[in-house]
Amino acid sequence: MANNNWAKEARSLMRAKGIKQEDLVDVFEVSSQGGVSHYFAGRYTPSNEQLERLAAVLDVGKNYFLDLINNQEPELHVDHELLTETFQTIARQLNLSEREITKFFSVYEKMNPSQVAEIYEILKVQKAEREEKVQSTLRKFGN
Image (cartoon, rainbow, N blue to C red):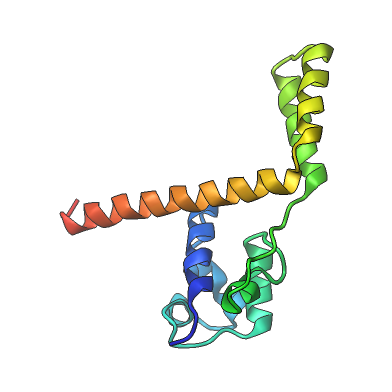
């Protein structure tokens, strides 16, 4: 059976972003959600181009799913400028003093933004897996 790790990871990212299979009809060049589900079930193998389009929709690196298929660590897509801007915006919203902002960013500079993003992605996947277990349990008991 083909390596279907890409589908598991895609489902997790889709859940986090509120994207449904029906939203991916153009990505997989099919006419319905049913066609998309064939790819996720492993009945069809997506092309490299389809996986690249899926990566773009889910806002991850171009080769993210290709790397998963090849059993490589996927490249994380991190927009460091956007991450910094996010922290700056939060600091302004919290009305932090210049001293507090300077202190925060001196710590932030010691961190590796890629490491922050990597840990975030790991935690996001873990959260999605926990939520899926809860939903599965609820379905099992008919709720």
